[in-house]
Amino acid sequence: MRPTLAAALAALLVAGSTVPPAVAGTSRADAVTSDPHYEAWIQTMRETDVRVQELRALDAETARACGAHDELQQIALRKHHARMRLLESLQKRGVQPGPPDEDVTAWPWGPGAGRTGPDTPRLLDKGDTAEIVDDGYIVYTNINARPEVDAVLAARAFYQRFDDEYDFLVMFTNFPSELFEGRFLAYHIIVSNKDEGIGFKHFFGDEEFDIGPTFTQDDSRPSRLQSFLHLNDMHLYPESTEEPFFREYTYPAFIAHEICHRWGARMLVCTDHGGQLGSLLGRGNVHWSYFFNSEGSVLEGNLWDGQEPHFSTTTTTDRFGPLDLYLMGMAPLSEVPESRLFFLQDQTNCFPEKDLRDDFFNPGSPPQSGVSCDAARIDFTHDCLVAVNGPRRPAYPNTRRDFNAATIMVTLPDKPATSTELGTLDVMRQNVAAWFHEKTLQR
Image (tube, rainbow, N blue to C red; front, side, top):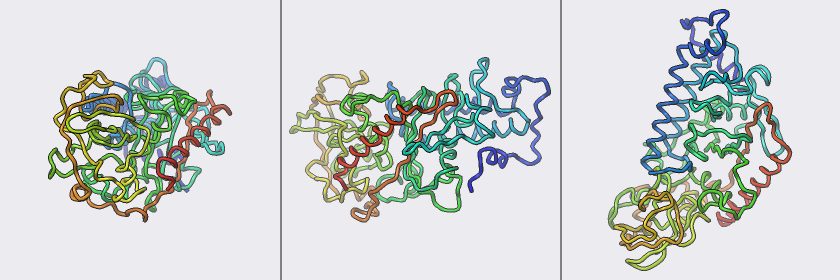
């Protein structure tokens, strides 16, 4: 049995702690803001927000785009632990949970505090969607006075009822909230990896890692969970699978983009043919470079055609590229055509002159069709990839190609999921599954 949230908080209490109890007659707001851990929590949110902005600045990103930097894993955990220490302290001092106070900007509890039972989120099995009604712990108010969802506590609420048999947890809300203080439209947190040769060692220092027990609260065995996705308010997504949702992405392609961060893009390339180790990588070192011929991958890059020195982009973000399929374990390296493995270098005379962010074209530029550039073409080989990244293990066809994904909808006590919302999510799930099945060659 996994502990309830109340038990988890109680387990955090430190014997002999000298945190003073709340003074009788003190308002809840005063008791919260005077807690010695409150300012530390605020400072953690400020510091992590600065770091997220630094990561976005490195990418020259101006829009609320996808958040997939591998560092988000540790940033999310840092925010979570700071808040848990505050909640622990408040509980020990006898401060009762309560909904957000309008006189306090950041508040450690959400709208459901004290409204859904004793410290346990109300999880409703709605067929193919797990609805988690905020109990005051899953949602909190951030430093912008906006609701934000704690990914770790949302996952723990899910696992209080469901077994660890899912590879992906895919979370939506049915209300507006902020993701990392409003910096992202959606985000992907990598939880575990056991595959070799797909680039994790370059950024994590090791191919294998597993922080799944932090989410499942079960450290008796390795977690099956590989990724946690927060896809924001479901009402942001259009009904049509053909209508652009974000830049040139349809919503199935956008969600597939987030899922695909489980495997890419982190590949380095040898320098035997010219270029640099990171020539394939763009935004955050987890997207393909704008100048890499990704064949129109959902992980960015472009589909480049032409002959040296004149090149142009055509279709973008509507497929998994050959290298994506290899990284995902959906294809052998032999199915990645070496004749199409290249990137551009020393670009000049690009038209239009600036990218979709009104910046000069650079490796982090978002995919864009109808762009022409003069450039040198740098080709590379399979051996070049393997020399730097190692061979993929396991290799196709001995790879896992069937994955379980659980859909979670976080709701508020006064805004439960409607039958229309549940039906919409069901259609979205079916459309994404069909897109994924088709684009992975039905393997």
